[in-house]
Length: 352
Image 1 (cartoon, one colour):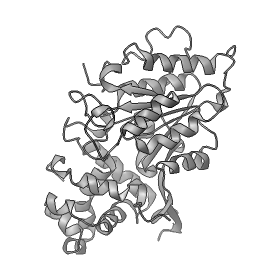
Image 2 (cartoon, one colour):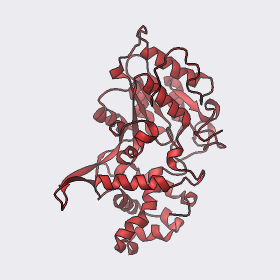
Image 3 (cartoon, one colour):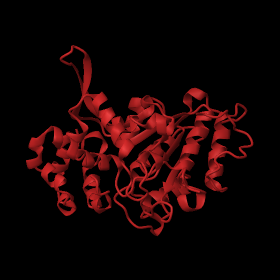
Image 4 (tube, one colour):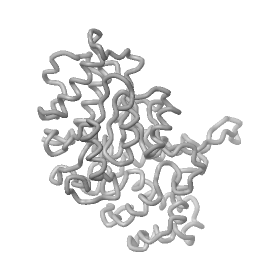
């Protein structure tokens, strides 16, 4: 097991970087009928241009039986990164916010943690001290909040948190901060017999809690960083699974390709991402035969969302990094770069 990764989908270096941004935390801790011809009003949140047209052209090329690049429905696999591709990832990953805000509840069940580091520091609310926690300390936080409980208990805890947690900028539930143009793409592909998967560096169990409701993607089509589980029996004799603090799949960068093969077993023909963590997934997708679609979301709209790159001269970011090298590769390989500012009429469903 690689030691530079934490449990359940959080890169420890990335997590350490996001903790620096803690001042931004809140104070309290259907598919439509298939249409491949004359798209007309499809993808209404997209402005007319090369990005929108690339989606239409790809679907036409792969679903029209008269097309030389026709793809049978069984092989119509499309994969989507989640953080920064399907929903907001700034100022910190949603799952990181969950882990930090879960510490008080964990300490309530285990009062002895209140006097033990790093839980004592987190409970103090001292953001400068929290930002200085060691990698080992962060591992303890992740283990305490993501493992050691039955899988059903974890799912219930995440579900309850999502009902009340609010993003610090919009004061809306995280599940409302879905990029509406990408939601339209999901539905468009699904209506044309594509099987859509989430392939995320975040925790697989975490994303599965809301994927069906938010994206229309069932749990079995969520591939993410995953820990092991252990089978056992409760005092009532009923069997259950416990989440274990042992990494099974690190679904980031090259690990995303490994996860696709391990969990899906087919090479995708379409892939959507937004950062260097998605590069290998797009490369793997494009390396196949026939029509292929590879798209990257560029966050370049400060007024409606966030601005970060550092591609095209945008500010650098340790979360969802989109480097000039990745941008150059996209141009060279024929990947489509989606500009939030120029390609999307609106970003969220609540935008007017």
